[in-house]
Image (cartoon, rainbow, N blue to C red):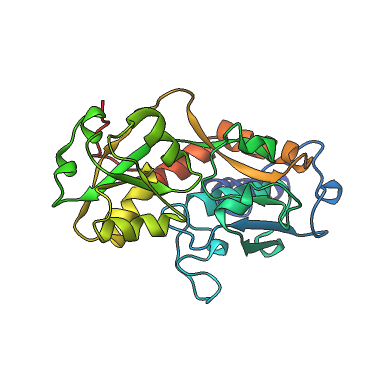
Length: 289
């Protein structure tokens, strides 16, 4: 009798360990003070999330079967930011079915005013001027900017930050990419500014600019998929404070406290690093000194 009980106990233990090792049924411990029933949410019992549309690789992946999402549907759970979002949701007690997504343009995510989402995630840098209008979570990624260009353009051979000065560069409006150009590269020609990253990609294809500046992990998709015959010229060195991506909330939303705990737990247990290696791991682009 005792041997039978012991055998059953060992079987349960082995199954539990196997589930943990494979990312199976076992769930992370509940976050103290963050019971789902007590969270301040847009819709009770539902986590209402938002991101930009199109949602680009490698931040979002898995494609889209809906006309509502142009490239990737954020609900796939694939791609770095989708995986981070669902990791946060899981730690707050939400199942995948209890997470709903909406498309919100990047610039509107950090504009003043009431939000239709609980939080927004789409490579939004935690800039001081943005913090006047919205609240940011703890960082879930530290980013470097990079330059991409057509291989046929002489800028593709540049190997120093100073070497970029003579070229016309472009970036999306209101981004840290544009800030980097004007603050640290200071090109001889005024940079061109576009409404969206898609518009910058189109400008580079059309040879309206010599190089586009954007975050480094996104450049793999730009050069491998969006612009045939292009290359990553190099990563740009960090200048001033490190650039951090954070989750965006309506100003003063108390939900940030629990999301911060979830993000910090994901960093402490190695989840963020594993997701970064899986979805964002890139090599080969030099740092322009």
